[in-house]
Length: 123
Image (cartoon, rainbow, N blue to C red):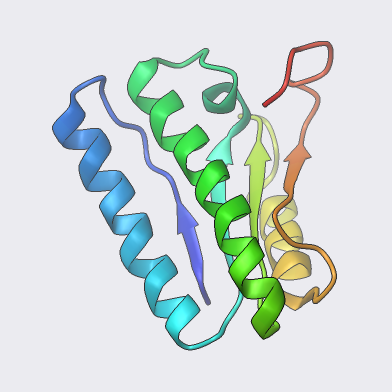
């Protein structure tokens, strides 16, 4: 399954870069195989509430998914993001990941699972 789960990083650029490189390797392999992929990030990281490093990774992955979606839409594969809160059951996250991997019409999107983003300015 082509899923990248962003792990927590410090604000150190070396850690941020390593995490983004791991995501790139998975994404490149999926794209070369013309297969859909999903990034899983924390809602708070997209909002910059858990540190600069985590925010760089999460927003970088969102940007990467939206950019890859353009290429994938021409070739029949998708790239999406699932953003979740702490209290979301892992099974619910997996359900959304599977839905997005199976979808042919949804691409370049972020699906937010949990209410932590409500009332916030969103990227």
